[in-house]
Amino acid sequence: MSIGATSEKEVDDIVKRVTEAGGTLYTEPAHKDGWTYGCGFVDPDGHRWNVLYMDMNKMPQS
Image (cartoon, rainbow, N blue to C red; front, side, top):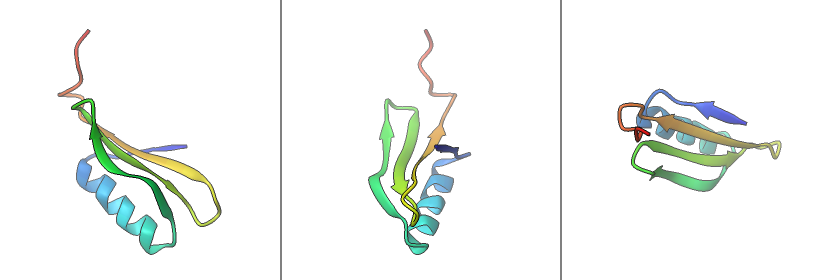
């Protein structure tokens, strides 16, 4: 499952709440391809999630 974020700050805020609630990151927050920022985590019940922010202004044009 993926969660769409509205900014890089929101990704970081979600990461903070996840870890405070007992979740575990399996990928640290990072930039990818110059226009996305996100991470992955496992919640306390073992479900895997992604959090992703996409800066559409930086998205490559075809």
